[in-house]
Image (tube, rainbow, N blue to C red; front, side, top):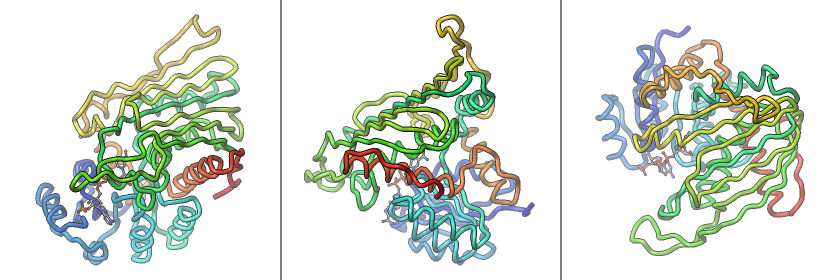
Amino acid sequence: MAQKLRIAIAGTGFGEQYAVGLQASPDVEVVGVFSRRLERAAAMAQKFGVPVSTRNFEDLLKIPYLDAVAIVTPNSTHAEFVREAIRARKHVICDKPLAMNGEEAAELYRLAEAAAVRHVTFVPYRFSPASVAIKTAAQSGQVGRVVSVTASWGVDLREEPLRWRFQRKLSGAGVVADLGAHIFDLMAWWVGPIKRVLGRCRTLMPIRPGEVGGRRRRVDVPDECWVLLEFASAGIGSAKLSWNAGRSQVVEIEGDRGQLIYESPSLLQWLQGKSGFAPSAKLALAPKSARVTDLPQQNKDFARPEDALARMLGDVATYLRGGEKPDCVATFRDGAQVLHVMDAVEQSNRTGKWVELPSDI
Ligand SMILES: NC(=O)c1ccc[n+]([C@@H]2O[C@H](COP(=O)([O-])OP(=O)(O)OC[C@H]3O[C@@H](n4cnc5c(N)ncnc54)[C@H](OP(=O)(O)O)[C@@H]3O)[C@@H](O)[C@H]2O)c1
């Protein structure tokens, strides 16, 4: 395995959490920070003792002995930054969603494979102890043949001004891209691929105050989404995503011998120190009321936000240094699969019809 991973971070919003997690490892050195505004890059570099700060992404790629780049900028910028990093033969972590659509994401996957660089789509909920417990239980067949999977999640963004998330050219499909990137990934990771979808999207808050000056502006992305799904081998399911109410992630996997019930508060809010984090994973064996038990969870690495970040990004870094890929680490292939789901939801919303997903990316 490579001695030390020398990595640069593009993005100073959620990117700060990457710095916390990556710097916790003695085998990782954060060597550069990019932000569009130099003062923001410089402030983050100073906070974390990082030698290079820049407002030009290509400057990061010129840092001597750089091994990898983490891309944590708005969704519309991911593809071009990833392409540049791959051209420079750097390993890449890209935050979710990997790109603006499935075709673009699949292209990034193929480019990374052809260049033999390691590629990761960062989807942190996979690492949560409850999520890992559900994955283990779903794969063990404890609930028998899976017949349905239902999910819902809401993050209340009603007070948010019109930032990039609410603009199609910068965010893609709004709530579908933002929350769907996590939920569709978890569903497919736990029970296998999604085959086709029927989606409905709505914008309940079509006008928001602008970020600067407060002038009211039109939103052109959905803030509500309802989806019916068919899985390749896990029956039927549904997902409800909302930016108009704060609700825990809840996913129920119904099998012919019982049920798995996952519930998780916002990981992001906890990482940012705004709330607690006590996700649960339960098993209810048929008849359902007879026995509901908590699934065993390995909580020790999730005692504090900084421990969780160290664990998640430590696993990613070990993989980028040449280690085995932990199951929780998603690749560009996974990122592309989820983007195909989002594309199909939007297409279905436009046509009113079920939309089949491609059988491969
Ligand atoms: N995995 C998760 O749980 C999670 C959580 C939060 C966010 N995210 C993802 O992380 C990414 C960034 O989100 P965020 O909330 O951190 O956003 P943010 O707070 O708005 O930060 C964005 C960063 O990107 C820079 N930036 C903004 N517009 C840019 C442009 N057009 N070109 C290049 N750089 C630009 C900003 O620079 P300046 O500020 O200097 O202009 C800033 O450094 C998104 O893809 C989001 O989906 C993931």
